Image 1 (cartoon, rainbow, N blue to C red):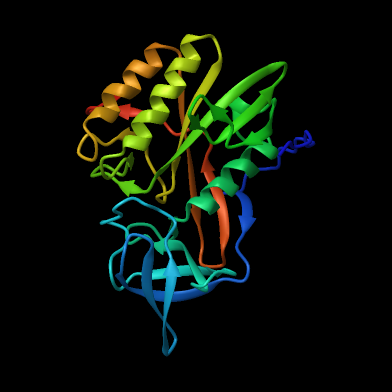
Image 2 (cartoon, rainbow, N blue to C red):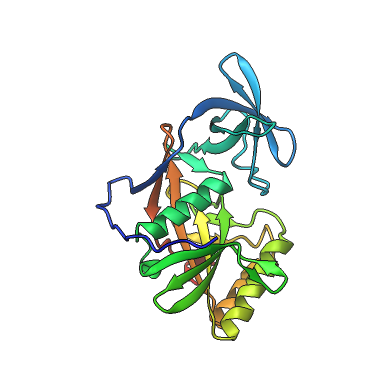
Length: 256
């Protein structure tokens, strides 16, 4: 699918960030447990319902029984989708749904809110690169730019957003693909969607996959540009961009 170039509109930032979209209708409940990799059970009023979890991470610090959750409706067999989970540190909700994260990223581009993509527009989703698929092909001026996004929904001990929270062969492969593109002179970006409230920085999680920090450094050395954005949502279903360019951190103080 090809997208027409939109008119770029840069609106005034609100104190809470820039509103990107709204989930409507929205349903609130209380998380009971995670039944499997893709399903959670939720108490909604006097009813217990199942909700589809699109995030494949372990989410051990996020999917905690008793936390408030936000659901949207679906047309599939499981009638609800898990979108947001209450953050116990901040008064907001962490965006766990990867589809909502993708929508937020796309809106950020369309509205011209990301300074490194301000002259860009989306040409194609899921472009093929060899035997792999990345998330986006952008057109920036006269240049093609390949972009892969990753969900960072783990809070570190210092308020960082972290990725990954478990071993990820898919993540390693995508980083390698981006590195090959950059080495051949093609612009390649890796963007981490920091979806925990008020992320202070993004940090690769060696405890989740010890190879990821090393692969990131190697990819950057070959020309891959690594960025991170921070998003969150409120209990009205509004999703905000709180930081278009989150600092990237490694070790105690070192920025990537």
